[in-house]
Length: 247
Length: 368
Image 1 (cartoon, chains in turn red, blue):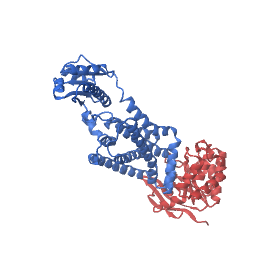
Image 2 (cartoon, chains in turn yellow, orange; image 1 turned 135 degrees about the vertical axis):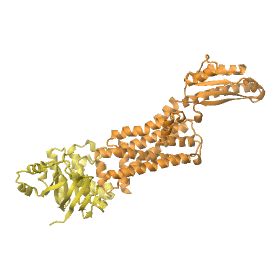
Image 3 (cartoon, rainbow over the protein chains, first blue to last red; image 1 turned 90 degrees about the horizontal axis):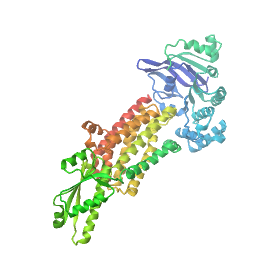
Image 4 (cartoon, rainbow over the protein chains, first blue to last red; image 1 turned 90 degrees about the vertical axis):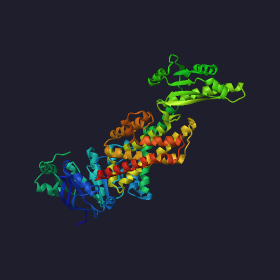
């Protein structure tokens, strides 16, 4: 059994009377692709923000990459990558400048930045485009570049918040190839998604409803547990019970 | 440190890639100086004036002829009495009054010196300045002509009075005003827009998740605009000294020091706006409302504060540009040292600390 890189115990976040995330307990193993599902407003983002060190939990315990989310947020930040549903790239900067900037703020040395840039550009097949402004790239490329930039500092864990929303199926498929390649290298992937077909690509899935984790297992076991034919059915079965409305 | 440098470099990319911003940042000071400096001050033609001649002698007759011959003035002859003149001033019908006292010629002949009075409507400072200068030079001209014929030195002194606005006598106040306005524009508007832009694009989130400290993000945003502001101040000063012949009377280092302080004030206002604004438009309108309008209306730049209703005078005290305006005016025009402006400086420092503290506190809360 691989070691756990994310470990939470009764992790809770309250905003006044509202409990956004209620006693979340789960762990994610190194190299795992962990799907984090839930309707809008279910508490996914809150949970993710706590794990990224952006928000201090109200109670409970959690470690990320071996560091405590209360005390060592700086160390956590150094060991994780983050990709949001919005573009994390600067449109008025070129491809090369974007890579250099993100590598730069993670404190990579000039040589590392140079090597990494070349490797990345080669991997994505963007050799001819490095001097182009990101604005001029097609959406799919931006998405892939954005992922590559998020892992430019080789984090132990990468958090992705609905990374494929608004991308066509072919590009999504290619995107997942990148994710698999990263996971093969031992990187842990923590991903939220709206696409149920994508959830099948994950090693394990947790489904949140109204701030609580209602199901957590491999896609295969979940389907068996809920006697469903697809993840769609599993998800809608659980999501229907939700009392909160999405935002 | 290297991380910070990377960040600052990126900010400069943003600035230099955006042609419109660039044009505004560097072109605006020049355009404004040219507008205010040339278009608005220099040529005033056919200004309505009144001449009250209580002496009615050869000398006054000659001076009056010269004034009437000038294309700058249109002498209003219908007004005679003191009351009429006063009323005309109040209604803005006349811009200037020239008064020769009863014994003007006698004084000139016997005492070799005479005084005349020039009263200008200084609510429009630029015009008032220009007109009094014209009158003075006409009188000087005449004096020179007189001196050619006689051996003794004769002097006619136009005693100038600025009506409604005595404080601003003879000052070219638009340079300090433009400085305040440009810095407000660059520091408040540009900074807030650039921070809000990161929020809008979602890149702010990425930055917050990175090990790069949030405070450093703010700091890195400040640096480029600080540098651009210094560049702008320098270009404004160069233009005013070399193109407009307005020397800087006081200490230039003191001037730059105070400018740095005002830049800090402006940057903290920009930060405060960017924390509250969710979109670039909001940030822009917020900046305009919070800075440009008060700077134009309440700093004393366009309209003398002394003439405002008391409530507005009170409100003007919370406008930072008012204090900066007074500081620059004192240094540039009066040549004042620090001892004359320490009060204004302390007020600005206080405002800056207050604004900084409030915005950093709010910034932290937002991160939670």
